[in-house]
Length: 369
Image 1 (cartoon, rainbow, N blue to C red):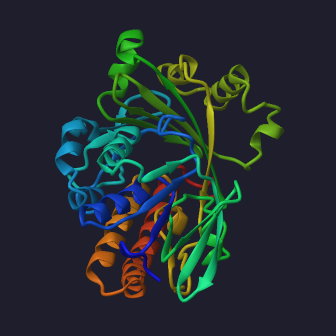
Image 2 (cartoon, rainbow, N blue to C red):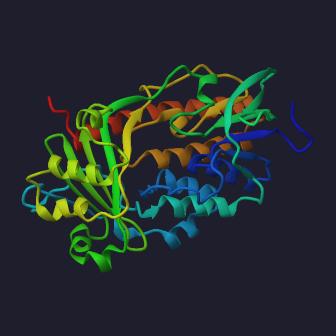
Image 3 (cartoon, helix red, strand yellow):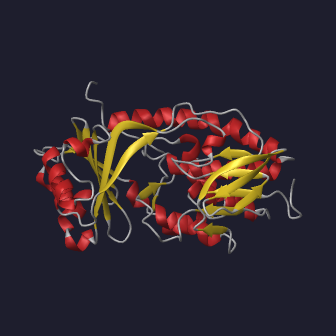
């Protein structure tokens, strides 16, 4: 049941994967609508720096006609990794993960901005909180919004992340806690305010890990260094620790105690941070996460294959979007296109999820290893 202007395609979620899909479709003259629950593009920080790999993220950017613009913003020098001993800060060999030699870094917000600026005005409908989708028959779906309005579509794409509202139409799977929590903080204008720490971190990422915990410091643009304290603990670790998650001073004191005995310069990354502490427990979907094909609806990115944040998720989300767009452009009908996309994406994501799980264990080994 196509409209006069072609199939009605609704993407739920204006993350990197959904925007890549929308951009490639529009490049080929296809109409598309993106629903995004956030009120505007700048309503919240978009996260840290991403290394964009040649065979995945850059391939998607090439399909989207945005590779040159990406190159103009990217930081090739930020591919550098420095691994140090937690107690002495002496340099250690870098154990991985190893990517190709052309994986320049870019701030997630900058990359998202490239996609948003490339779309036709009005493509993204901000402040539209989708609550689910229901089938109408013959492969068509009705998208439900929390204000009581609806939108009918010939294809609904769930690109709405870890806690997708579209996923239940295809799968009963829900994300599970890995036992690892990241606490994010940062230092603004670090080159000026903390030049010694800036030199220690360098142009890329600094890593120290031992005893089921790690400190990572990641160079972002504009002199910002984003810091992650990662550790294995129950999801409600703060209850036993008697720490309120939004109490900056208490969280800082707890982390400094947790990492007591580590090199003082490494601890200064926590001691002098000025952007508060954001709790990011790591959740994943079951591996493999698959579903029986259902006409008129599919998933991409974290909605389809939520995995640990070790450098693959954003790349795969963009590649998912580009691959689905390519299938929709080349196949004779929507159902064939979605089947072709799922047959490509599902095995690829299963292997990637296994690789990411291993990488997380290598970064923060289980205590019984």
